Length: 173
Image (cartoon, rainbow, N blue to C red; front, side, top):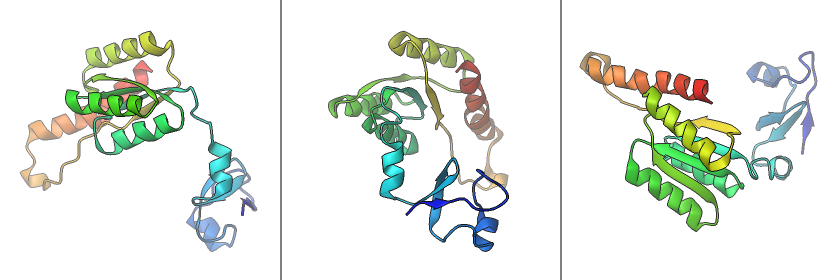
C-alpha cells in the first residue's frame, strides 16, 4: 500500500522521529513527493519505471563494485552509459557487458583526481551523447588501515579521489 504523509512537515521525508510519532508505518523506507513507498513495492517500481530511459549518465568507478553495479542497473533501466575508472580492463569489461546485454555504453580510463582527465572525460561524454543528464560519482578508495599505520601518501590519494575527484566531476558537469 501507499501511505500519504501526515503531519506538519508536508512533503518532507519521515525520519525516525516521524515513525516514533506514528506518522509512518514500520518498513516504509522510500518516499516520493508527498507519498511514502514501502520498500520493494510494486507501486514504487511502477512509478519509477522508465525514469532512466534514454538518459545520458556518466558513472565514475564503473570498473567494479558499487560503480559497476550502478552502471549495470542504469543500463538495465534504459540509460545510455559512459563508464570511467582507473582500471582499463575492468571498465572496458563493464561497458562490453552492458553492450552485450543490449544496452549502450562506452568505457574508458579516467582519473577523477586529475583535472585534465576529468575534462577529457566530459569532452568524450559530450562527443558521444551530446549532453549529460546525470553524474554518478561512485569512484572512491576505501582503506581499513589504522590511522597510526596509514602513510601520508595513501591519505592524500584517498582525499584526492574521494573528495577532490567528486568536486572536480561536479564542477565539470
